[in-house]
Structures are given as structure tokens and as C-alpha cells.
Length: 469
Image (tube, rainbow, N blue to C red; front, side, top):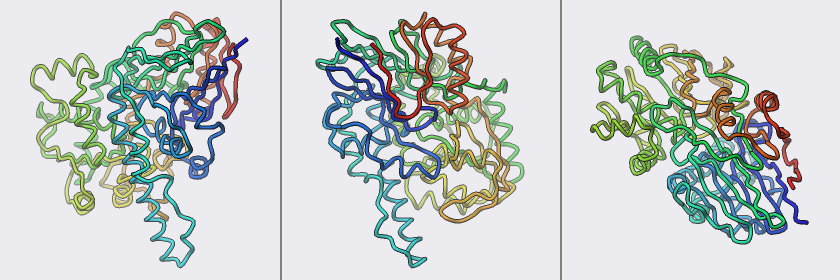
């Protein structure tokens, strides 16, 4: 009798590093291949060998483009994986941008570390980037984009297709149909589920009840606060900071949160509710991603599509400047007067945002505005939790700026929305696995699911494997 197994190699009782492997006598499928973000051990964990043989995989299926779901693809390819990587069309386009950017960041961070060590007359021979931009682009060539709801053949293994998850452009709920003992087993991987009232993106789609479910739990232990009019809250924060002559520094993922904040700033500027405050999007990746969003506006919410038909482009407004070059980015550090600066990465783990924080954290006129989830041990989480000083590029910086979080900006469904989506499935036949959440969030969501689920609910540990058939 043929067996079906699932193993959890990342995103198990943690939020980052999504990576789950399905295996049967017919072969193996990998769901996501994400980078671990946050914590001092992340460098070692990202460099470790995979606990499986990459050349033996039959396919890789990506739920979406965020680096904690796609960022180790270059390592997978570099260690022998030669098959296809399937994703939606927007995800394929965004991954080419995001993986290249991740490679550049790895090279820049390695160069910065070498420079700092040489100043200290220390050995630099051991410093290597996790992977290079060239290696990232080679991996991106493996990604094949397909439309939502189009069945994809996985050869002898079975088939797969992608349903809309909301969250960010191209994000998918992955449905895998595998042959096991002459029967089809349907495994559903939620990926990251979006929210129901986003300004730019649509809501997650309902899907037919699967045999097995892998379900995310990022906000599995919390409800988003009832913050009322989120756009008005944004206006108040920007105006309050501008009135004292400060800058609003917004750490935001270049794909997803940046565009959502832009759409709401667009509403404020074009309605006249916010005047005289320039907005800078400081991210080469965000600049490219904006063009992908514009090409795939069919993924927008109904409201955003209606406004587009009426001639209102939500990602373009007076006072907006998209910054690409390093020189323009550095010039923002000398900028006087009020401004809004959106820069990546969203958890402050890498990229230009670390430079903006380094230059602006100590000024009490400024505001650091968090608009997305901050994973444990990331720089963003430390600042959000009130830690001061914080270490950036090997130096300590006091946090004197105002720190504000607008959790309603998060692209992740909260506990209530997760449970509502689960109920929309109409039940899961054989078993549910709760993943991609910190341990408390996973355990809490699992308890809620057990109260209404007919099937077993599991919270796997890292590298734990389960027999499914």
C-alpha cells in the first residue's frame, strides 16, 4: 500500500521559513522554500543543508513571493534541484524581482561586514553572502507562472492548482491532488491568508473541503484592534509628526504593505485631507513591484477596481516620489522638514530601512510607524516592544522617536477571519496541521479548531514528519 507523508522543515511553531514536504512512493513535492528571518541563529539556519535531497524533489509549489516563503529557492537550486517551481503569474513576476533584491542585499551585507571587520583588523576570509544576485536570478528562471484555477500537471505525482488568498498580489491557497493507492488525496495549503477589508487586495476565496489542511496561524491568537477608519488614523499620525517637523519612517514589505499604505495615502492626498507632506518610497524592489501591480490590477479588491475604472490610479498621486538609486536614498538622510519614507524590509531585518532607522531613531520629532507583523527577535519587534538602545550595523542607537503600530494594516487574517475561512471549507476530512505562527498563536488557533473540527488537529514541531494515509 502506498503511503503519503508530510514533513515540516520551516514555519513550524514560528512565523518565517515556510517549507513543507509532501512525499509518497511516486515522489516528493515541496510547498514553499522560505528564508528564516529574525533571531541571531537565522544565519546558521539559512545555511544549513536541507534535511532532504533537493534533486529528488519532483516539484516546488510557491504560495506567494514574500522572502519568508521563497527566499531559499536559490540555495535549493544551488544544491541540485533542477525541476519546475510553480506559482501564479503575479508571484512569478514578483519573485524575479524579490529574489534578485535578496541576492543584492546578501552581497551588500557581506561587503558591509567585511568593511567593518577590516577596520577592526579582524579576519574576513569566512564572510560569504548566503547567495548572490546572479544565483538568485538563475533560481528565478525555474519559476513558471500559471493563472489562478488552472490545473497544473505534476507528472506521476498528480496535479495542483492555485486559489486566491488575498494577502498580497498573486498570493495563493495551494491545492495539491496526489495519487495514493489508486485514489486522489487533496491537500490544501493555505499559504498566508489576507484580510477582508484591505484597501487594495481582494479577500481569500472559499475552497472545497480537502482531505488534509496545512493552515497558517500568524494571527491565530489575536484579533485586530477595532481601530475605526484606518485611513484617518494614518492621516492623524502623519499630520502629528509633520506638525513637529519630523519624518514618519514606515518599515514595510516592498510587496504588499507598501502598496496598501500608498493606496491610503493616495486617498488622503487626492481628497485634500493631507497636504504639503512629500511621500518617498525608497526601494528599488518596490519601484519594480508597483509596475507588476499595475499589470495585474485584476487582483485588486472590487472597490480598487471600481476606482480604477473611474480614472483614479491608487498607486500614483501628487507628492509621491519613488526612489531607486543609492544616492537618492542617502540624500533622504539629509532631508529637512516633514516627510513620509516607506522602505523595506518590513521587519527591519535587512535593506535600506536599517539606514533610515539608524539616522532617525534618536530624533523625538520623528515617528516609526509599523504597519505589518514583526516576528520575534527581529529588529522591528525589538523597537516595537520598547527596547532601547538597539543595535544596527554593529552600533547602538537610542530609540527616542515615537513608535506607533497600526495592526489593522497587517496583510494577515486575524483569528476571527482565519476561523471564518476554515468554516467556509465545510470541514476537513482527515486532518489539519497548524503552521506559520509563533508557538502560542499556533496552539491557540489549534484549540479553537478542535472545538469545531471533526478531524484531528496537529501543531507540528520543526522537521517532524506525519504519516497521512
